[in-house]
Length: 180
Image (cartoon, rainbow, N blue to C red; front, side):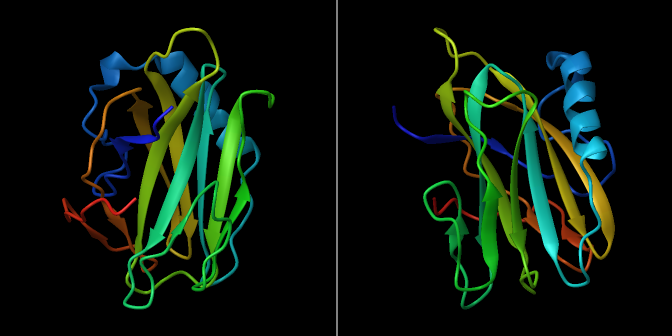
């Protein structure tokens, strides 16, 4: 199966803002379950660290992609590359056989000063039919904890991403071409 990025993530402009998908299009109950799973397992980050976690349900295997946007960076940490030269590490890659809700986790320590592009890939369906699935992403850093919701769609490709900076500042609608 071809790996396709399916959702642009983290519109870190307004708390509670969606990422281009109407809120009514996602199962609200599953969103709440995924968000609760992240809250129940949240831990504090060390100063200077950026942690990103992706929570998703039983219907698909989603993958988390983090790309350092710095001059020396442009390295992506994901399921096939667990570490980068700039401090990125994939800590957990949940798969179809794992208990739900599933959580992928990665860190940059230290957080890249230029920021990180975050993406989600719909790797495979865990059932016979591939259907859109909700997910929740948590970003934790010195500036606090942010939660964003999205829907991963099989066969849909989006190459617009938003940038997360460790200072807590965000570049709204900052276009960064997909380099995955």
